[in-house]
Image (cartoon, rainbow, N blue to C red; front, side, top):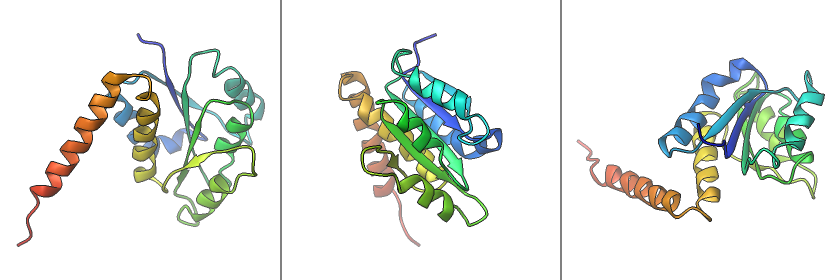
Length: 160
């Protein structure tokens, strides 16, 4: 099995329903990944240890999804220089609380924040692929083909 380049982490196993879309998109591009459940609040030591060792394990991007008081991406980002992409997940307030918790990072600790839910998970994976493709021409070619495929699907759509 290839060395994981991306980690997909989430605050709870119940978050998998949304975060699996990131994992599936990474699979589509052939990007090796690891998946973990880590909680900023319930397993803070493990989350910090995971983030602190990410670079040494060869991770180049971390996608972190959480709902509610969604601090996971920020906690991960505070302990690594590996780019962290945050996916706010639907919650009691339809994900608005998650979005605000993820996007409002203090200056100096960046988290790239995507849309709430499934679209955010998919786009986080695509952004991870784009980041990785800066040094991997084969991924850049796959990304271009994916975009061309999207364009063609829209061109084929017709209204009644």
